[in-house]
Length: 520
Image (cartoon, rainbow, N blue to C red; front, side, top):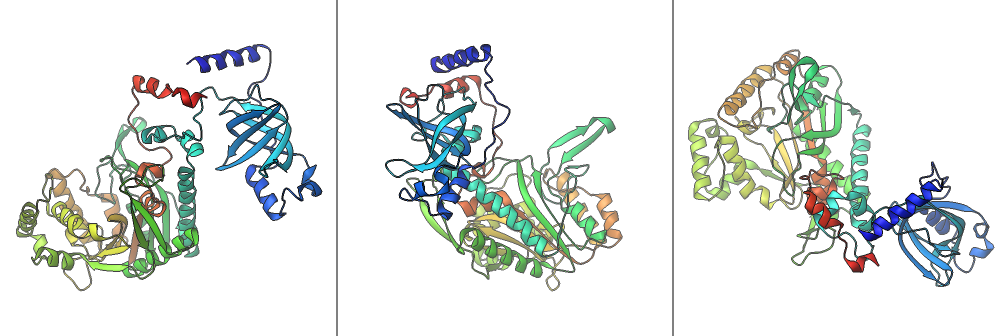
C-alpha cells in the first residue's frame, strides 16, 4: 500500500542518518492509570490544578497513539495503555507521529480549555513506530474472525474484549485464593501421558524421539492428582491446560483451561457445598451482585444483536438439584433405572427412545452415549440458573464411587448454567477391584469403536492398591465459566489466542485493503 511504502522509506532514511528508531527503554514514572488515580485522590480540577504541586511536577507516561488532530501549532493526541486513554496536548505540530505509534511523553498534568484532563507536553518521542495503517477507534475492529486473529488490535480497539480478559484474570485469582484458604496445595502434573485418562475424550498424540515413545497430550490431570492423595497430601488442586482432539464450536476449543481439586475424607455432598460457596462468593466479589445478566445471541464485540435476549442468572444459594434418572423417567414416561442400564435391554430401550424422539446419536450407539444425548435434550437444556444434575448411572461414570444406597448409581454431580456443563464432581472410587472392572468395561467400549473411552491404566490401578483414602473430586471449565459470567457468545471471545485455521494468502491481502474513509 502506498502509505505504508512511504512510511517504510521515511523510516529507512532516518535509520540511514543514524537515528535510533527503536530506543532501548523509556523511564515511565506515571502510567495513565496512575495519573487518573492522582487526580481523583487529590481532587484536582481545572480550577485548582495550577495551585497544586502537579502544575509544575514533570511526569513521564507512554502509550499507543489512537488519534491525532491539530489546531494551528497545537496537536491533540490521544494515547491508550491498559484499557485507559489520555489526551496529550503537544505544543507543536506532530510531523513524525502517526496513528498506531507507541510514544513516550514528558510533561505536566493539566486540563484543556474544554476541561478535559490532559498531559501538557513539549517533549514527545516515538518509541516504536507502527508500520501499518492502524484502524481508527471510530470504525474499530468489527469483523469477528479478524478480532481473533489480530487480538493485539482487538484489545486496544474493543474495550469489551479487554474487560473480559480482566474478568478472566480475577476469576482465576479468586479460585486460587479460595482453594488456598481451604488448605489445598497447588501442584503441577505431567502434560504428556503414556495412557490418557481421567475423562472420556479423544487425545492428541505425539512422539518422544529420545525414548521412541508414543505419548498423548493430557485430557485430564485426574489420575495423577489422585495418586498424590495416595502419597499423603490430603488436598490438592491444579489450574492448567487440557487438550482434546474433538470438534470446535461455540463452547469447545481443542485446548482449554480447567481447575481440578481432590480432597481426602470428603464425599460429593461436601464438594457440592464448596462449589456453591465458591461460585456464589466469586460472583459477589467480582460483580458486586449475585444476579448477573447474560445477553443470548448478542454480538461478538459485546453489543446487543438484533435478536438479543437478556437472561438473568441467579447465583444465590442453594442451587437447584435434579436427580438424573428420576427426572428423565418423568419426562419420557418410562422408568429408567441404574440396574436396567447395565444390560443390553437397557441399551435397546435408550436406542428406541432416541429414535422415537428424533434424537441423533452417531455410532457407536453405546448405553452411555445414548443416555448422554437424552440427558442433553431433556435436562441440560432447562438449566439456565446454576443447577446440579446428580446421581449419574454407573455406566456413565467410570471413576465415581457407587451410591451408598442406590445400586448401579454413582455419587456424582454436574453443574449446568445456561444449558452448558460448567463443573463435574463425585465421590471418588477408591475400590481397586471395582476400578479395574470399570476400566475393562471402558476398554470394551473402545474396542467397539468409541474413541473417547478410557484405557486400562495399570500404574494407576497399582497405586490404588496401596490405598486411596475416601475422597471427593471436582473439576471446572474455566473458559466456559468466564463466558457465562462476562456475556461472551463464543469460547474464542475468552481465549487470547483461540485455535484458528491458517489464513489463505489471498485473504490476508484482502484484509490489508483498508477502506479509503478509514485511512483519513
